[in-house]
Image (cartoon, rainbow over all chains, first blue to last red; front, top):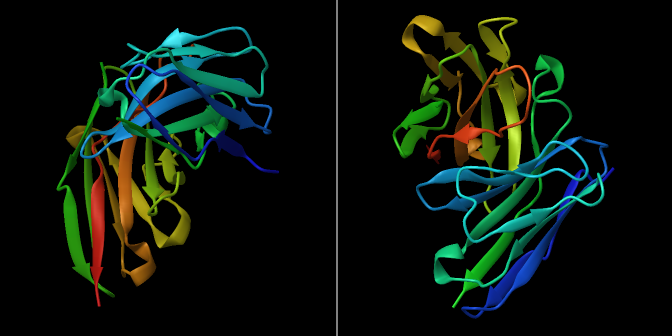
Length: 116
Length: 116
């Protein structure tokens, strides 16, 4: 049981380049999330998904797109990377955020992205 | 909208001393509250969560937290600090809106330093 995995672990981009971050979970969770972590800012929600084929905007969605074609995968795309998108990106998943016994989120190890 | 305030970006305690990390929340509905720990270069791991079943919540690694509605607080404590407790700690809240998944709102984090 791998839990939540993210690829790649590190990436360096030049301004204007595009890339896709992949998140995979093997816990059969319906809900998946993408966060970014910046020093002194905590984690901020970028986009989330409540199930296969659905996505929704979070707190800081500008400059990012997402897709959830398969239940186990949640992709985060940067179409034209900017230095302001230098950050550590975390994916998370949860079973049912409205159920007290199953509402915690499980996090992946993160992707460290640098945009030059 | 819900929000979380963590008092003190850095907290330093001696090994064996009491650990107290403060968290205050703002939510228009009864909240779900979480404490996560992040070790260097790793993802977030759930320490404990409050889901209205009991006001005193026990978590992993000897940590516990008490929900105080009148003070809108959810402070994290541990009676005796260990060197392995050195990490970043995040308090997070999810408003119980009864449907939909809108992720977690995180505090900015508290870096716990353990002095030998």
